[in-house]
Length: 204
Ligand SMILES: Nc1ncnc2c1ncn2[C@@H]1O[C@H](COP(=O)(O)OP(=O)(O)OP(=O)(O)O)[C@@H](O)[C@H]1O
Ligand SMILES: [Mg+2]
Image (tube, rainbow, N blue to C red; front, side):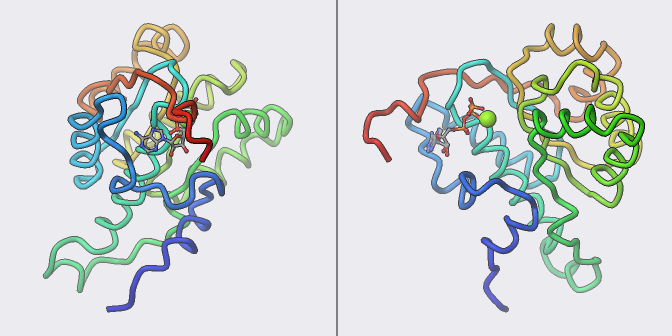
């Protein structure tokens, strides 16, 4: 079997250059004592479940683990245990997509009456979306987010979310019905707190 060209795959998933190469195996679980949470996230990803990582401490690894989870889910989607992989359709890398919510929200707002086209282009044809920093998009996008979550819920597609908002903040922002769908699929909101890994002091 040919080795997976992860760099090409990550680029097609629209993963930003600074996050290329992030995996479970290069996440230091000792830093901020994240061993149990990282294992929980890895298990959910392996089973292609929804994942929501929350917390307003910066640099604690929410995006790192969310990206590792998306890549692992893609891997499981692509080649589950034999004998299934012989018959399963192989998903394209770009049907797994990293969406930075701040930028996506700006694009939606700037598109005005053509926002629908951006929504379609983002949501249709994707099997898994990683919504990074949900809540950083302009509030005017709330209806688009609600529709997206509901659409993925109904069509049994996967969402991986990072957010600075806690459960109450999410309910306040997007409404109880949307948060109920997210928690229903994810099981629970995984809170990540601690010291920023960026400030660990070795300058790398
Ligand atoms: N425990 C860790 N082991 C290895 N690298 C880590 C760890 N925690 C964070 N990092 C790295 O630190 C940087 C910041 O982490 P990340 O972006 O995932 O944080 P975050 O929780 O999403 O916060 P923010 O959204 O504010 O950036 C990334 O380069 C990430 O790979
Ligand atoms: Mg982040």
